[in-house]
Length: 335
Ligand code: ADE
Ligand code: ZN
Image (cartoon, rainbow, N blue to C red; front, top):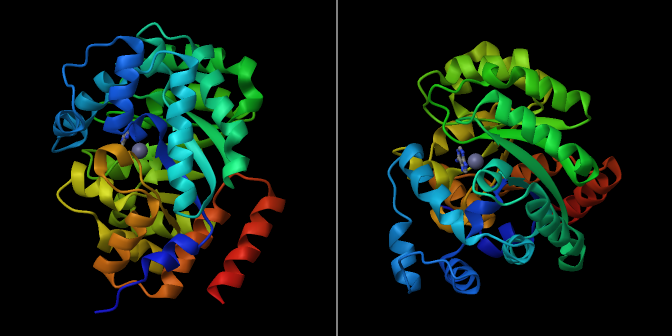
């Protein structure tokens, strides 16, 4: 059995394109922020907090995930959260981080949009000192109303230059992409790039994937491996160069398996598959770990691991100049 050297994976310049900043809240930081803000979270040790990070599917994960955000209160908290992630990502060779944030998870509990974006933006501005070019992607919560998404879009417009694109996350059940067609069209008109979650094994996964490709017009799909159910859609996604941001460790928590065979099949079919960590504080693996477990499970060759890194850079929304520079670095390392 071959296994790819972890130092080799770390050494590859890569983009992380599917990372929820709220999902990087490690137990240590959660305790620190709870103390700083005088929030009683009901646990006082790292082990106790870690024990609450327990779930069996997407719905039960989200039921733990949103309440945990109560410790995020001030601009400094959002900055500290993002900087902690960026430091961790730098160790994994991340040169570009496109970071999801969920404004409605904060505005709905009385934290202003300005507090969230100012804190995150402060970390984004510091990212180059860690060797990372960072960007923010604003996600709408699909289990909130379309009107709430429209209000969130309006709230974001004064900060248009700090946000590269919009996404859609949270519970897909009963919340298909067409519910957000109008707000995504408005976001596109405002110059935002578009991505959307198509979570794994949902009731209507394949219909939702068709809708995001045909009606919403996304450039990337977050997860999306159920596309394999329709070979015509696979061919179309390949032809259009749609990026698929796949998260094997996360999959193994919210479904019964990491979907490694599906991820490898899409990669080998020539689709722009990249690997990311989703909510690493909850699922326990940052980006290099995600690549390593997939490589091990699917016996990826080192050329395929390099292809994952190349795909991540190519499907990122960084400038063409920066992408060309990182791709040259990648080819130098990959040989
Ligand atoms: N929010 C955070 N992680 C998510 C995921 N994996 N799917 C949907 N919404 C999320
Ligand atoms: Zn996600």
